[in-house]
Image (cartoon, rainbow, N blue to C red; front, top):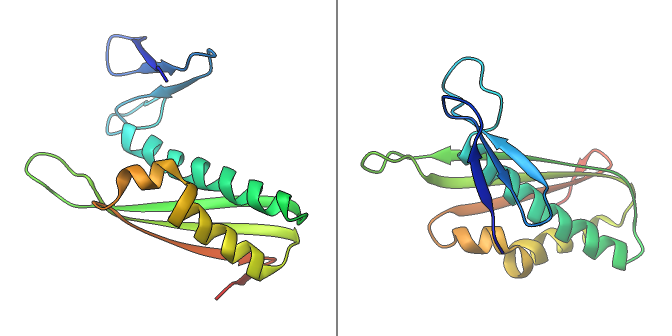
Length: 140
């Protein structure tokens, strides 16, 4: 796996591309007029994307009908010397459709305990928790 980063302005705007040519923009979002996401925001996006792929894949294999899927991810940061790494990350999945809530909860569990490479990369330094909501109801 290889990513390239190219600076595309005189400040902090970078285009990051993968080997297939797909790209995202990274920027210093503390400055006005930022045109991309911060690297830390992109890390939260990676957690959402990785776990989201897992959850959708697991539920599709179980023939669950997903009509809508969203995720929200919040990260809490802590000061460590000059850096501010994530201390904890909370993921909330919002699924709509003909979905067995127990299967949705199990899919989230499997993602974070077994499959999601991004969250596994962050362990054990970052506590990652999750919630699953199906058709407007939180699944316990």
